[in-house]
Amino acid sequence: MTTWLTDVERAYRLSYFLWNSAPDARLLSTAKSGDLSKDPSAQVERMLKDAKVGRFIDDFTRQWLQLDKVDDFGPDVRVFKDVRRMTVDSMGREGRELFRHLLENGLSMEHFIDSDFVMANDRLARFYGLPAVEGDAFVPVKLPKESERGGLVAQAGFLKLTSTDFATSPIHRGSWILKNLYNERIEPPADVLINEPDIRGTTTIREAILKHQELESCSRCHSKIDPLGFALEYYDPVGRKRDKYRHVEELIVDVKSTTFTKKIKFTEAPIDAAMKLPGGREVRDLPTLKAALMADKEDILKGVIGKLISYAHGREVTRADRPHVDAVFESISQEDFSLRAAIHAIVAHPAFGRR
Image 1: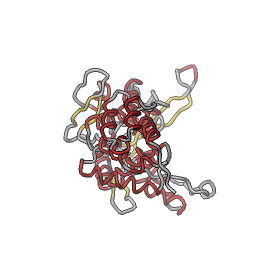
Image 2 (image 1 turned 90 degrees about the horizontal axis):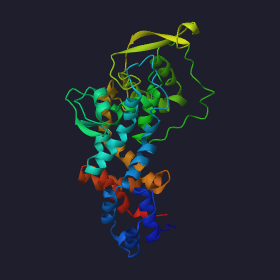
Image 3 (image 1 turned 180 degrees about the vertical axis):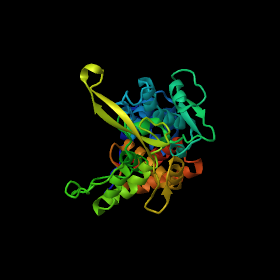
Image 4 (image 1 turned 135 degrees about the horizontal axis):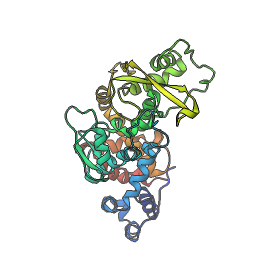
């Protein structure tokens, strides 16, 4: 049997959704009068214009994108000597600032997939080779036609987050896309430790990962993950464009002769990033990946809506939430899939008042 929140409880859910705090007197008054449950739009709009909505932006994007972890390690200063810590810090802020810009300006969530602009400050604009930006504040910067940037998967923060300190990780990149854009759960099979593939004789990461696809228990997930991740192999561990691999080999040296106990040497190798998605579509680089993601726009936007509903309700979404997700998607389809409209639609749906 369905049980419903009281009007005051609904006010608390809304306030913790958008402000991360208890409701103010005005919101409580509207709830007690019964107006909040009848039409929450005026209160939602007021709350979105309040500075306290910054708490929602910060907390939601931290949980969703995990870009606060972008500086947890590396990059290896021996490999990326010109990448400064403040630049890495800016990478970690870009996803949040894109979300803020879309929300504040009522722009389409399609910009999460691809966009003709990026949010950048002085350091990130310089890193991307874009026109100069003054200061630390993030502003929208129009991309030149030849640029591959735009969208979450083209951001240096995401590309670095899903790499090690000196190597890319196609599996981590593909997994991130599935979990955070498609909102799919990825769980290793129970027998994954027993049935590890035999990767003897493989010489590249591509060969090793393709071995995983030979096992049925691995292929169910890897057939989705691997093409998404490999399409990004033309971007290095700090998110810069490259046209070949630069493999790193560590050499043991005399401790007295160097600051580091290990030196490194580089070997180059060609990149083969082409793979087919389960439906047969080939992705081979960032532009073809973004085209494939845009073709899956409905699934991805519903994935983002699901993330927002999960945050609003403080729990994982389940199959029972599909009508809520579908209704929000249909509602905002007439408003260019505006992120701001999505927030309104989530709160206005009857499910928002369900316990």
